[in-house]
Length: 358
Image 1 (spheres, one colour):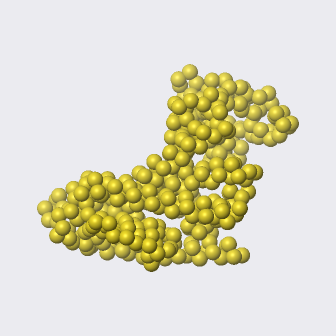
Image 2 (spheres, one colour):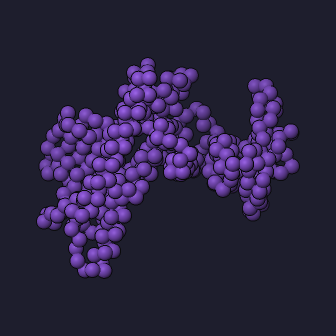
Image 3 (cartoon, rainbow, N blue to C red):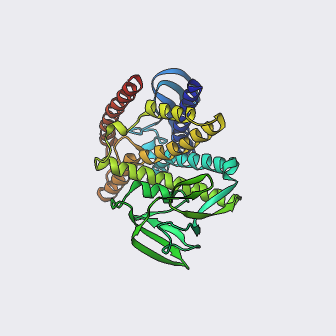
């Protein structure tokens, strides 16, 4: 079963890369930009076929993919070259890859929420009742909508426990909690939010004692919950990057394609049943899709975000100087960024393989 989950994980990863590059490809074709090659993965080709002006290929190293457009990083006299397209068309083409990742992540969530038996009702971040003995008793009231915890928005019901566990305020069990009450914000600057031994349907357990409103599933709240969950996933990526840049997590906590595939397989095999395993794997796939979209939009040379910044800068400079800049200069910058990224990916790949062996 573990091997099947490995294959399923590789399939998910491959599909996410394919749809990312497909976003670039489709928008390039929409704006009549010539595409020389559309490739899934990197390295030597294990399959390729020429169709019209474009070479389609599947390569052997699962570290990405590319949509190679004419004149992307060099001068080209071809009127259909990427560099000769209008600046706003180039930005749309560059953004489209991440946009497709966001769309796929959202659609996976819609499918999971809309068709899973576990979502016959959808919890809302609205207080229905507060259990006697809860630390929140006397502060929150039925009808309060949870709005913020420690400065972070509450989008879906489980954000309540997730944000508390992150301890963003670094103040023990005291948190800044903001609710919407009768249309107005009510702030509790240092509210003690403590899990206590309270009665539950399965006996006594550690609980916050906060019961939230649950609504029957319908199209409106499925779409709303899925969209808010996608935003929540994006927030998780942002917080993770913040922790990485501040040194709160190290490189050993960062995973590449091999580590991601192993993690997906572990999630599937540790689930109680095959159906739950598939649900968990697809949910993780939605998170990875949104993660890929955000990471590609970071303003780093060689990534889509860095290229978008490059288009904006060169367009601005050319508008002032009235002279067209040599695209090779930008190409050298992105080539340097690609070398750094490949070195980093190689280090992460080595780390992932060593962790699997050990």
